[in-house]
Length: 494
Image 1 (cartoon, rainbow, N blue to C red):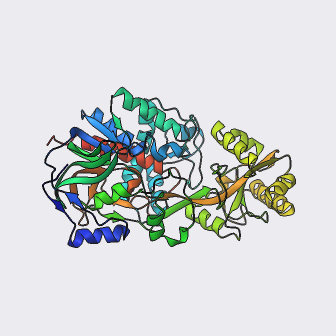
Image 2 (tube, rainbow, N blue to C red):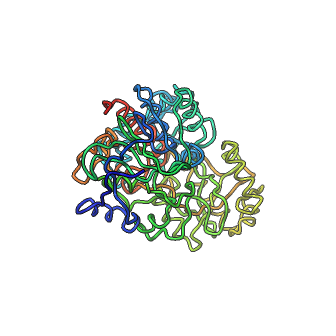
């Protein structure tokens, strides 16, 4: 459809693009004046059908809005469906039964410290204050969590809630049920290319321009637009531009070479990017290997060993610390080792992945540690000695090598058969993105609100700082997805 006029960003707004992602934005119109006509209209348009987007759509509908979700792929779920599924919250029901003292204030304090105090304290406080509310909201939709919380990989404290349904599928199934009950349409294979604002960098946001199977379409949002299109982990160019150290690493995100495109569309209408250099890697397949196999989420019951059998890090450390330890080995990978009791406590999805890994020699099991090491290609004497030393630390509740917290020295690795898998590093999460406030409103470079534009989930920046706490990503999606949807749904119709 022809537009009245097309405008390019100039001056400070163009500078925001180069600061955010030099060279990524095409030499193309930054935004549009209003089109001559709209192809369709809803009260709230949500961009992205992952966890944050679905949470936003549900809450917007509950606020009385007519809602649509625009999804780039042929299926809903986004990266949420690939997540391990843990979500942090200080829990007044589960934690006291386990003798765990916790509070949202402690959660917030740890989140800020883990990100080297580069996160916005107000947004972090909002995240943690609303964490348990996110748990109970999901439960009200039909979600079922395990009765006990635990400390997950990179989680720093035992407050992770694990869905009974394996991985992120539990979230997607419950949210999709709520979407269907509210008759919220999801338009699939729709690529949002531009956000429509009254003027290139001023006025209200009015809708979006997108590519569909039927060509270019303009969709009007009478109340607001919520951006929930995820981060840019799958965009190798953009992530390596901001952190050249991760060049050559794969990603555990859905493949999407245009990841970050919606974020940059927001920049073209005045959005400002923060924290773009902060990119997180987590255990996955080493270079040249096929499978991401996860046996490390229970930090109190596993160890990381190198090819010489030496333990290399406190398993309860920050994720960036573990990344550096793994990539600091001569091989640039390590192994996760657990005993049978721990292995059996994992769900069927983990067991299936391990079985597939064993078939291609990327995971292993054996009756003894010596036999396990031989299968792994690890030094048998070294692994036996390393595990024995660790078990000694568990017995005396003191880690003399890496200072692992006493609460995480909970279990020896001693009951065969034993299990192991490769632990390489893959790009997992981008902490940078659109700057927002506690109402999930997108802000420009002056800190002013861009009217009727909201964002939630990994497309945003400024919450997690330099390093995201394990279990806080799904929480971010659920808390700020709800906030964005509620506020967009309550906007006055224009």
